[in-house]
Structure formats: structure tokens, C-alpha cells
Image (tube, rainbow, N blue to C red; front, side, top):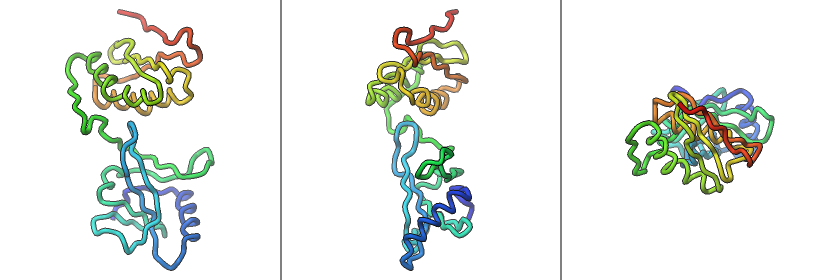
Length: 203
């Protein structure tokens, strides 16, 4: 069976080390499951599971001595993902997944109009409700094809992770839903509250 999740040598060694501490005579595997959605990313659960409890449709692959179990409903969502240790050397595991949930799934969102109108619909109905939980917001400052200039304000201005939020979440959502957008430009001045954005030249 083709592996769903690739496991690096470092991650495999770490998991096998942890498995050895769990050894009670029951054959165990590492279960990797998608449990939900958090913003633009999936949420995951990693746990040890008895190989005797595996369902027939689950993916079970022996990864050089480590059995990796992916439940049937998570296979498509995890296809091509990689399990690794943090590059920073910190604790825990890192799951790098090229797949992303559809941010519009289950939402009554109709993208109509020109590009700026569609961007504003996504910001208002999909992106800003999530940012508002942290006191922030994002807004379109200008559209100069193929670039959208996005300002992050409120709790997002000066936030150490806001530029990451823009790249990993907002940029991905906008590009996936509006193919005319090829680049997102962050015009927020995160270092100062007196000049919070750079205004691009108007045509």
C-alpha cells in the first residue's frame, strides 16, 4: 500500500522510542487523523492505537518498522503529508501537509463582481470573523493586477505572527478562490502605530 504520510528518519526514531515505553505486548501503530478545521489549516490528532482495532478501509503502512495508521476519512486530507521533528529542535512533532480545507465549505458565500468586490466578500465573510476573535481585521487597500495590497489592523498590527497569518492563511484563501490574484502585498507597518500602512501608488 502506498504511504499516505511520509515519515522522516528522525521522526520515525522518536516515535519508535516513545512506542518502546508503551510496550505492553499489544502491537501498536501511530494513528494520524484529521479531527477538524482551524482557520486555513486542518487540526490533527496523533496517538498510539492497537493494530487489532484498525478498520478495513484504514490505511496501514509499515514505515521501516513503524506502522502508520491513517483512518479512511483522513486519507485524502493527508495524502503527501510529512511527519518530522521541529527544525528548531523543540519538543513535539511537525506535520507538513500540502492539503488545505475548503474555507468556503458549509458557508453561504457567493463570490460575484470584479476582483476587489470578491476580495472584500472573502475578507468580510471568511477571513475577518476568524481574525476578530483576536481583535484584528484585514482590509483591501488597493488592487493593482495581479497584486492585492492587504492591511492588517487592530490586534494584528504589530503582532509577531500577523505576517505569518497573512502568508499562510489570508494569502492562500484569496489565491485559491480568486485566480486573478498572483501576489499578496502586506502594507501593514507592524513596527509603528502612527503610520499603519503604505499606500500603493494609485493609477
